[in-house]
Structure formats: C-alpha cells, structure tokens
Image 1 (cartoon, helix red, strand yellow):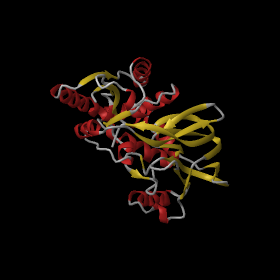
Image 2 (cartoon, rainbow, N blue to C red):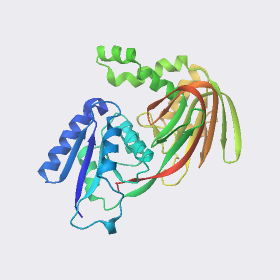
Image 3 (cartoon, helix red, strand yellow):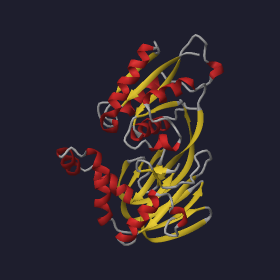
Image 4 (cartoon, rainbow, N blue to C red):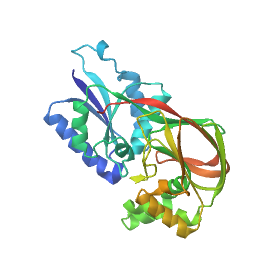
Length: 322
C-alpha cells in the first residue's frame, strides 16, 4: 500500500526546533520520492484549521480492506510539540472524526512521546511511521467541565492548582518579554515554577472516584494523568499504564516550602509513591469539584481561572505508531 503524507508542521514548537525538524523531514521525503503535502502553522490554533480542512476534504478512517491498492491512503502526520498534537486531536474529536494520526515529536517537553515510548528523533520517528502497517488504538482522557459546559481531550494530563498557575505565569506577556530580553526563553517554565511556589495557596476540593469521596482542604498539586510523565519528563505517576482504559489521579496538599522542595526531590527520584503526602490511585472515572477559582491546564493548554466541576473519563484514539 502507498501513502500520501499530509504533514502539519509547527515551526515554532520546541523554541524553533520544529522548523529544523520539518526541513529535515521534507528533505528526506523528497529524496525518497514519497507523496506528501505540508501545512506550516503561522499562529496559535492554526493547526486546528488545517485539521478541519483536511478532515472535511481529504482524510478518511482506516479500513484497509476498502482501500483500492492503486489509491494512496491519506495519512495525517503532526510535527510539533504536545500542544500541537493536542490541538489537532481535540479538533478531530470535536468533528467526530476517527482518522488515524501519526506524530513526529518536536517540542520542548515531549511528554506524549515519553509516555508512549516514541522516538524523539525526527528522522527515526518518521521511519517508524513508514514501518507501521496499521494504526493502534490508545486510551486518552476526555473531560467535561459542568459549570461552563466546556469539553475537551487530553493526551497527557489535566491539572488544577499549581500546574495550571505555572502555565498561566509562563504565558504572561511580561514574563515572556523579560525572558526574551535576556535570551532565557528555555528558562520560562523553571522561572514560573519558582514564582508560583511562593504564591500558590492550598484550596478545598471534593474528589469522587471508585465509589468513594475524599475532601481535601489544602489541595496544591491536583493532576489527572494518562501516563507517567508531565512537565517535560517528570514522572508524576510512575505506575500509570496507558495500555488500559484507566488513568491515574495524583494530589499533594500545601505544605511549608521546605517540605514542598523535599517532595519535589522525591518526584525527581521517583520515590513519591512511598510517601503518604502523595495521594494517588487509578480509576476509570473521576469527578473533581473546586469552589475556589483556580487555573487549570490540559496538555499544557491553559484553562481559565474559575471554579471547577470536572468529570474525566477515558476515550479511544487511533494513532499510527508501532
């Protein structure tokens, strides 16, 4: 079977590494005479428009037996970071599309690639796509925020509290302006973490899962994750298993800064599951209620500050990887 590769490329991903990765892939495609079309994003959200146009005009679900042997299968490849992939797959689900999606990681964090054991080298990732004969079905997260009526998906994780506050801080114009002035764009996440650590207060939440309820008075880190990693390679839930339709819930309450730094150290060395200060369990459905407005995030995309009544369940997604 032959393929026509439709490649959405985010040249700004990974601090510009997406541009180089895209150029490398295009050179390889030309050299090997593959059929392909490229779509370069020019602004945030542009990948959604490309995905919508391709779904409506070109892409089809995978049904090998119904594809003529002389007709190339139109395969969508996303080249960019976790945020780019998130936007494309979220758009697919909003359009009820079941087209398979291939992925070439070119971001700063690449947590999805880590979580699903994909190569983070662009050329190797592409050849793995070529070697793949059919898509596989994976489990991802679907959420419904019942106060605002907002729905969406997450490939990696959804968080309320400090990780949402960090994303908010990182995306502030003044933060970006100062970091760019001193050529410290790669330090944005670290600077934001340190800033938020001193300011973020604990907040009350109610958690419902597995037929039980838990009330926490001082939630600080509150993350629902589909695989072990968040924040660019931190193993927040080492035991998370993305091969089953369950996800992991992790919560840490607010402590003194000394203890917070101690718990960060436990995270770095993957010792948190031995600590009673880390609440964690697996579930297939979770409801989280927070009456005190907080920032949230889904795959690093900011969820506006608000109260939350969040229901999370697993759904499936077809991905084109081995």
